[in-house]
Length: 314
Image (tube, rainbow, N blue to C red; front, side, top):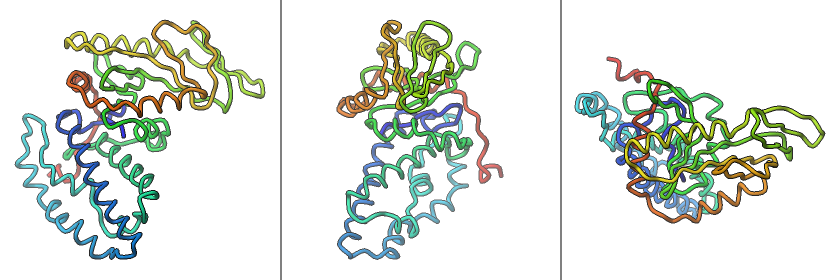
């Protein structure tokens, strides 16, 4: 599962210490999978007791929540790093009796359940810290593209979903940015009518033609991709980070007819986008140092709109 490190202008744990949280995500994912697998196997064998398991899983939760003010006093607010892993593990990954009751029996049924659990967990990490929180829109909660990219790409991929950055005293919203161990993708998805056809061109607008012959105009996605690539190139060059930047236009629903797209822009329509996902899934390269550095630079320019958690206002 790709790590969601930034969503629009939401505050993110990763902004505080990217290296710390990127490594911690992988560790927490492994721990939770082991815990849920054990519960699922016990359920399948008919040996599981929810009450006992809930006590074991959440025995320390109240103590962790009660220590919030001490945590607040102990936080290094100057550096901004929040390092009390136990506190937010208990807060974010709490497994009470009602949650444990939902865990399916057997590994086969557990896999999709775990993916959804982990995705919701990631949305929290990408929109809050221990002290502050951003509001996620209903649109983001229901965004299938965000969910697909997060759930189907490897752990070593970092996802910035339409991030808002501060660049040269200007605030800009960019296209989807995917930082892989070997390169960076700037991505746009065209979501049209099922089996419609987008006719690409160098004009300001493209045409979408449905199977019933209706035509509509959409902004040329190449413009936003080129702008995003230019912003990334400038930021990385300024930090002396050499990482290839690729640009891609996707459509899950439609065909894209563009015989000669601009140089450096790849096209993956409804015939090809799943193949692209499959190729990324085979990428076993670990997280690279220059990838981490690139993520840190981009996050440092992130714009965040958040408010203080109620328990931190006293």
